[in-house]
Image 1 (tube, rainbow, N blue to C red):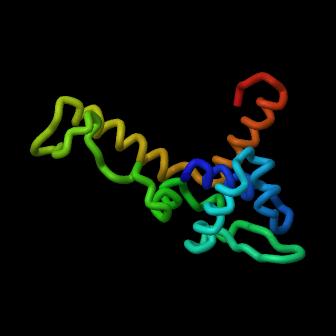
Image 2 (cartoon, rainbow, N blue to C red):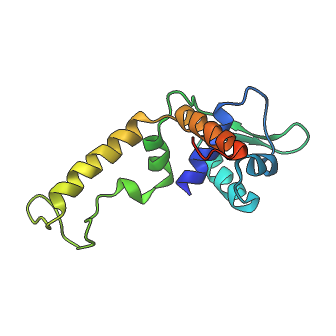
Length: 142
């Protein structure tokens, strides 16, 4: 869900226009509209988007996309990527009782968290725009 949410928020970050209907947003970013509607509802409850019904309504960003990070999005959505876990799936795994992959996983996790803290919704929007353009041109290179 976080990936779809980031894609939708990134798309809205690049729009200068007013609110966008969820159905139209879903079509443009190639996400199933019913699922995106549920995501938008949740994003509205946590203050990431504003929604309006009726004529001239739709959804728009309520956060600064240049300052809002993927970490913040993961945090408010309760994404499991933020929860420490054992790479091998073993229950107890920490610095005191370390599995064979613990040191590797700790390094990998530090890189993941750094990436999430440094990557903004605006950066996601810029990437997704390049990805969609490459897809339309058939190059496959984002």
